[in-house]
Length: 381
Image (cartoon, rainbow, N blue to C red):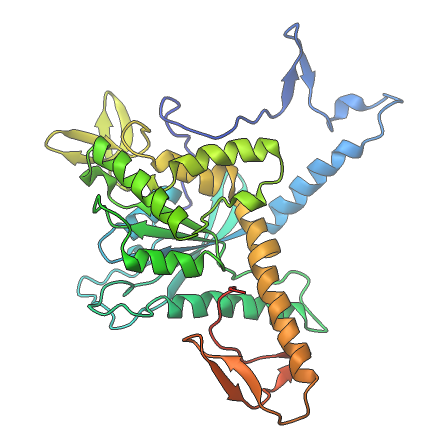
């Protein structure tokens, strides 16, 4: 696979939530001062070198690389594969790697994932894109969220089993789903019951970022009304999408995240086709009325979504996955283990079934103190 492009987007259309200064700082007089941690401090008796830890962390992170696992969920034809290709400026979607023009619609939801090693300016990342073909494509979509819930919990379970091993790996492979991008059809009306049920259940186990797919099918007035209606629907149903208010660390984070929350869901347009516009090569969609520029914030909100997922909040998304969602799962599983160990051998154990009901089962075999078999469960308490 070709590495992703390292070209910067058009500065006129580039949007970011915060500005970062690197290398040198400027004094009020305009004189440049070297950044902390460089060799200019040699001979300075007052310099200790504590700030050099940042450079050490950077070097270590560069050697290890990074992992990012993104799940895309939505009906067929909403542009999931195209949007992922647009985000990473490379062919990273399932359909791009395994094209099948005669692909049938699955009778049930299938989980298909594909991983890529991508690199940009020396930074290596293992990207895994998890697709869910068949979701919402049937006449009866009852419980179509269950295979997705099971897959997410299975990844938590795999990580937990590696973590509790006596001879565990120095670095545990991370297959946990860090973010789920949920594609809402551009109906212009309101959230469907399927949308509400999926996000209500899955928001408790994974970071969900809702987007309005193919937003160029709506006028600007229709788009704004639809976004407002969706936000009201999310509040009315108690659905907490990323970035969650309770996880804001300080006032600065709260200020930045409040601006993001005001824009959710992002109205996006994806395209991996380049066109010449005013002498510049841009990603866009060509129509009879003109070219829709994907990275132009006056045309769509793709740039805001990209900044959130990659440029400003990627590490935060991973941190919340590990410290909140996975931790909730881990605590519950260990509590279940303690409950099982407190019972006599062969005593039936109450286990929740996939449909939420309770079923009596014999105590399962254990590995390192934690039962290896588990049913599909959400993080609902």
